[in-house]
Amino acid sequence: MDLIQSFSVDHTKIIPGIFTSRVDSVGQDTVTTYDIRLKKPNREPVIDVAAMHSLEHIIATFLRNDADWKDEVIYWGPMGCLTGFYLILKGNRSPREIYDLVLNAFKSVEAADEVPGAAPVNCGHYLMHNLPMAKWYASEFAGYLEENSGNGKIFEYPKAERLVTDDGKHFYDS
Image (cartoon, rainbow, N blue to C red; front, side):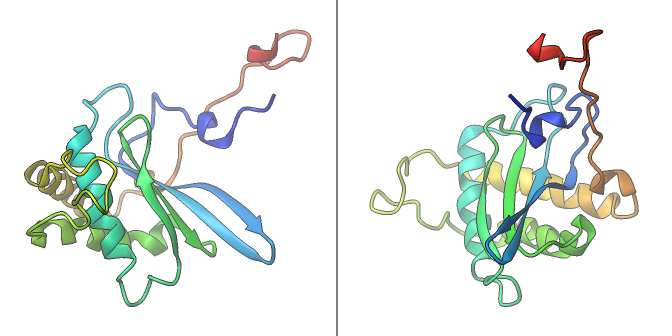
């Protein structure tokens, strides 16, 4: 069984940033999945679940209403490890090309007076939101992006080497 692409990233070396996770062809179209990583995996505390949920709602609403990007957005959602989000867009742009979109999405959280869709009719767990903490995480990440905009490492995944045994099998197959 092949290791999926997102597991081939060296999670001991990844830093917060905007990364291309995968590029797929869907019929005649190309879609790109981006890893929007807020926390260093296995080294920093993960994002609070309720704040993560609020960030999901607020930023999904921002992305799907942005005049320049709304028709390109396919998906915005949290990573199971709670260290970041996945953004899926039509087309294939470099992480640098979506930098302003991501930065503006996180900056938009500060202006939120409420979490959109945080009602029983709209949300599967409407009580699990934390707007103040969502604002804190968003501000922290937006500041980080601004401070590191010239650092190419926030746009390039560190790749993991797949160990191969003496008989040519990948380590997990041996």
